[in-house]
Image (cartoon, rainbow over all chains, first blue to last red; front, side):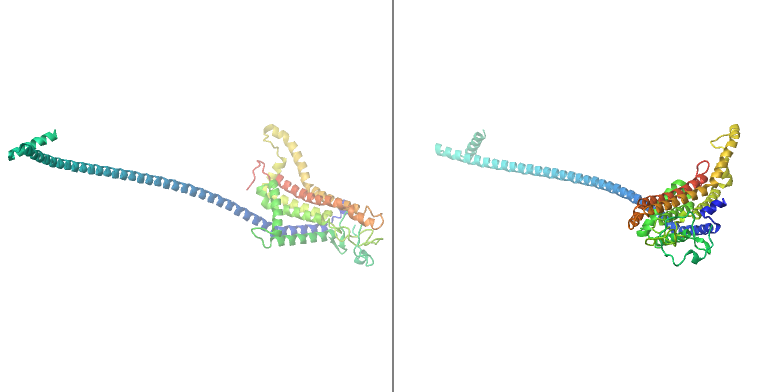
Length: 166
Length: 295
């Protein structure tokens, strides 16, 4: 063993010097290199995880907001449809009412016109009967050369009027 | 072994101060005779240490949440290593063991690649021979790859084994460790358990021997590979020495060139092998019998 260490130049002094130097390297790297880097990596990993969680939360919030928006939109659409329907129904009712009123007014005007026409015809007929009676009487007077009494006037006029009405 | 020569005798001024050598010795050599432990490999270990500390500090001094430049590279390396070793030692152990395993990997890697810089192992003092800055042998070379020195590899292996023992004892305890290695496994009970006990004790003793020899295997494997690489590069560099000038200079560059790429790979591979084996040893001894990790 001693011979072997001599061959390879292994001595306590050299060996211990290398041990001490390696331990120093180890401690320095551990203190100033590995620990800060591992802490930084851990911090970064934590932040990334937090970022992912935040992103997932935001995505969920976005989905919720989207759903809520769609719900509100659907509700608004429904209400608008109802309103439109209501307006449409009101419009129809108003149109019907106006139409009914117009029809009633037209019927009233027609009735009034018919009544006025009837009255006018009756008046014309009365005038025409009266005139015709007068003409018959006058003609009768001229043809017969007789002087007619009031009673004759009335009778001849009535007969003429009856003849016209028939 | 070490000659007690004076500084003047070892580095005579009439010799060229910087020369190229052909051979490489199996042991590191003291640069200052009065300080035996201050060898050429120790000098490189110091340089590598300095390099690592400067690099790590410059990368982590002003750390930002969004990494840039040196911090980015350093973090990428650490993150990759962390993920790799976490898969081996498990989540319950990685935070404790990572600094040592990562130090081993990075230190071995930088030291191995540092040894590939032209001049490492060849620049030194020696007896001149014909040629530009040529010497017969650098005695000693000014710088030598740290892992081509068994002291360094053994130091790393033993430091690791001490930490391994501490982590194992703190994780499973002495009783748990002995039961894991000596007790019959597989849910055997009764007479069969008693019959198999001697066999498992024998296997456990073999396991204990293998554990004792782990630092030896770890250190010799790394040392052997790096020293062999150094020898290979030196041999390739000196293959064309018998050729006339300047062909010998051209050959000394061209011949070892492919092997430099090989040694780059070997340097990385050996760093991985050493650190991965350490991680596996930790995994084997800190895994609880029922396979449940302690958190």
